[in-house]
Length: 373
Length: 210
Image 1 (tube, one colour):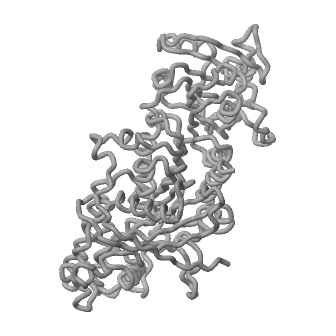
Image 2 (cartoon, chains in turn yellow, blue; image 1 turned 180 degrees about the vertical axis):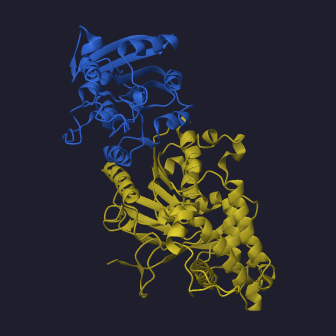
Image 3 (cartoon, helix red, strand yellow; image 1 turned 180 degrees about the horizontal axis):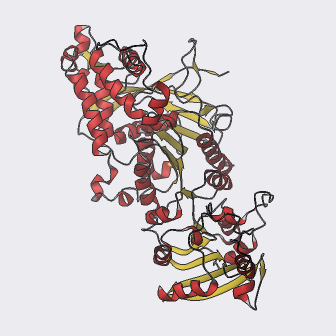
């Protein structure tokens, strides 16, 4: 049983100055809301999405049969982030491909899709857009800003960009900057896309084609890094579709079919230019960069409370990355709770329904709700 | 590990307002408004009490998932790590008090833990089970390793690595140039004033750098 939800759209005129120095003349943000904003306007929670998700956080998209939100197990009536008491907002970040202005949108200056002309956005650019949307919705201060992975980076950025506008930062399975290895994975994914002959330098929309092979390979690589070694072994092992070896290069092992299926599915709905943009935003995020590498100084302006969590088998955003964040917050004497959750599912665990994880989030939001009244 | 050592599985969960006797002693030694680090904080009872009764701030460090959840439910900030790794994360901290209650015997680098405690906080408070208690000696004389309410383990499955007597603990403090400010000895929660080295089941010390 879930509730139905309809996306809304908000138009912004006037240039948005970006970190790169470029600007967006005008743009639209697509968002969804769940629950009711209270009279004091104090119970709003912003949920930030990661690489391949959208504004559709929870519920069933009205008029569809199975378009369930990506964090529906976490957000909703009676869920750990309880929309009976909290007003939750999901926003599709600009540059993404689920309705907000992005590389697929028409560039008003040329009358054709932006494609490669769409400016590179950063995590901090996104957060500034989210703040502008909050202004429109009449929300001065979020009770909490929450996200996992790249979404967690946005929650962290909120804490130091808009300290007066956030009560709690809930950052899960994230990092204050990517490791070299993590950037390397992103680069392999990007190379798979840009070297696909159908990519046409990002102008594939004009040609009526999609670099499906590049996108599929990018997704396959990503997917491997979101799972744990043990998790994959347990799920697929060395299972094959046929009894003996086929002495071929077709998908004989179950894991091969699975990855191919995931890659194909992804390439049917995800935009190649968006994939480049979002992985670049991941690479660039590094708040300590302007503070001599000192994360504590980068987070010094933050005044909110923090909930940080990592998962034991997550090697793409390993617990050690969360330790760096927690250490910086402890140095700054910020209130922080850190949970290192035993879970076998790797990075994907942040989207799954682990009892300890959900009990912790429920308890933490209970504390937030109590502090509102 | 840690505080679970002193809580019998069948004990009822204490109400928030009722502190274990040794924790109540420790709380008495902590000034209002202190910034406290509680290593092996269990369900966060001490910190919750200090927060509500003495307006203290601070964090707990705890490895056990159920205890971490109990802390979050209580509104106590907790960092889920084992004590020794946790200390590294707090190296940039400036605490008034660092508490290590009934857990020092389970640490690996015990000297290092005491040194770190005295470095990141002005005052250290440590409680431990007194291995010199007469029952332990009697048990050993009968040829058996002691098993008690405070140390309910067999020799082959105990997490306790570094058990100590009262005198040995004081020797280590002086070796590390740590001055004893206060000490109290308890027998099942009641204070003991005579023959403490044999009668106390638990010892609590407050110390600071010389």
